[in-house]
Amino acid sequence: MSLDARLQQFKHKMELSLEGLSKELSGIRAGRAFTALLEPIKVEAYGVLTPMNQVGTISAPDARLLSVNVWDKGLVKSVEKAIRESGANLNPVIDGQVVKVPIPPLSNERRTELSKLAGKYAEDSKIAIRNIRRDAMDFIKALEKNNEIGEDEMKRLSNTVQELTDDFSKQIDAVLAAKQKDITQI
Image (cartoon, rainbow, N blue to C red; front, side, top):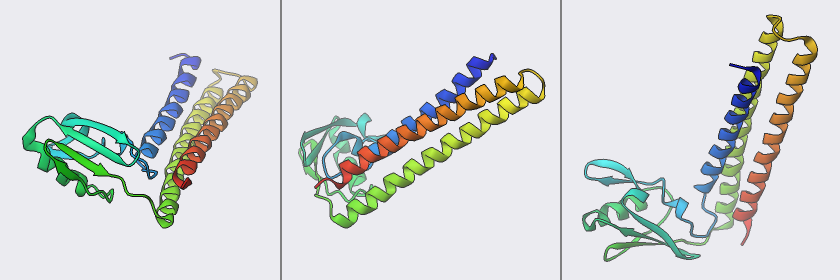
């Protein structure tokens, strides 16, 4: 594998870490209805735990309501039970083949908790980025030790890896700031 390809691999790992953070943060509700809130919930369907979006259509008809149009009438109770037991403090209501989920407004205490949780997710992503940086630096040092690259090339590559790390850390901070702003808006 070429050196440039290896550096691209490290960059790709950092991108995946940032994407993972975005996905984690999308599961934190900010007092408004958004379909990503229900997507990770698993429903007991035909003896198998199945993601919510595979048993029905999730939509947000307004800012304070989610609805799940369940495709199989026999799964309506399972969907309602899965939402109720998800730990998201939601109380679904069955309306025929549709499960309606009103989204209650967040208290200030809950907003603070969610903001701290978002910060924890961001810090975990930064740790992952730093671990990737460490692996890249070890790789570069091994190349220099084996005389595959010179000292100047090692310093240039090390600077490139550090710049990537700094860039992704700034992106994580920006994603976190946007989510915390979203959470704290009343």
